Amino acid sequence: MSWASWTTAGVYAGTGGVRTEEAGILSGDLTVHTTWSEGQASVAVQYSGSSDWFTLTGSPVPCPSEEESRAFHQSVVEAVRAGEGATVPPVGAGPV
Image (tube, rainbow, N blue to C red):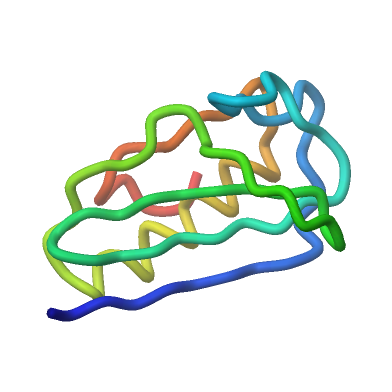
């Protein structure tokens, strides 16, 4: 089984924050975490320094390769920075 994970701390959500399944909108200083396994990428966010993780709305998504999951993680980070109630961008969309 192949898997990979990517974490970026200190991502400041743009105006309007990001939308999560469990807590609604989060804003401020966030940590973004993407896990890729078995052709699927899952994205969670947390307030940086917190122990609680929240599923970013739209996660998980199909993602065919580890390489693509790394590019996908970066596009999620850019979507969080853009804010506006960001959700998971499409895989392969590239940075926003």
